[in-house]
Length: 349
Image 1 (tube, rainbow, N blue to C red):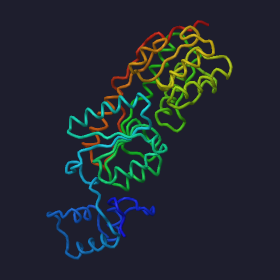
Image 2: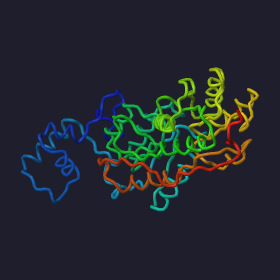
Image 3: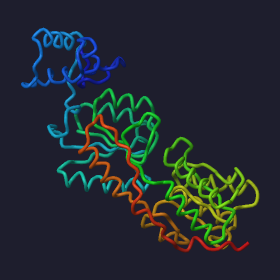
Image 4: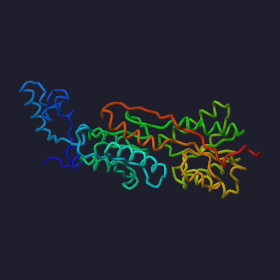
């Protein structure tokens, strides 16, 4: 019995049949198969070729996926957005920008969190690939090779937001190297040379880009720091607290810390207070992302502002305006700015 759910993976785990599979069996180009499936009246081929394609469709049990068709002809008028975690305020900004742009184009945005389904986007890919959405945005988080294979199999238009992977060829990311440079340059200009880094998860693309930016800027300034000046955590206050505890246990504490994420910075401030260190008298702190709560921390936090809402809007724009198979590799560098507050000052020692 053919798989339900239109051209998707079967209940038994068997890979669903694609246009490429049919084209290979019929000995024709994938575009010919697509035009036969869609009854294209302008297609001119031999009758025997058309019959061969139809026989291959029947033999392989191919079922068309409505979501794989052009966005211009789809009737769902909805876009899926999968984020890692709703508790991270950064993603609220991205969702706001994506939703505004989707509404402007008369689309509805449906958002889901991969953390609610065990940290993988696979479950959402199964559901959304059944024609529920016209395209899919994957914002941040870890996207496995299996997830990307699933995307290719579904034929669903997709794009990654602020995330790049080894196999990925459709993404829009922020210029994290520039953000790190602004943070480090600010600390160096204040006179700091003992600058540590609370990094993000080791497998996260954003974390690796910010870490490289930090290291490159220190090298450019002629500053050498010990390896233990870099401690990884996750993008949560708890992760930031654990990371700064690791830093403080390593030896002489740094005079400044560049934190990869605002949520992590909350934990860093807590950890420094618990250790009896004053910010910024003993340790200056600067973090990536300038959300409203940054101005209300104790002390108000120096940050690097990133255009998160614009990133969300740009993801929707590119999803709806580019061919699903085309390469999109965009780095957004505009409107990344340092916002100086009371958490940074010249080193006292």
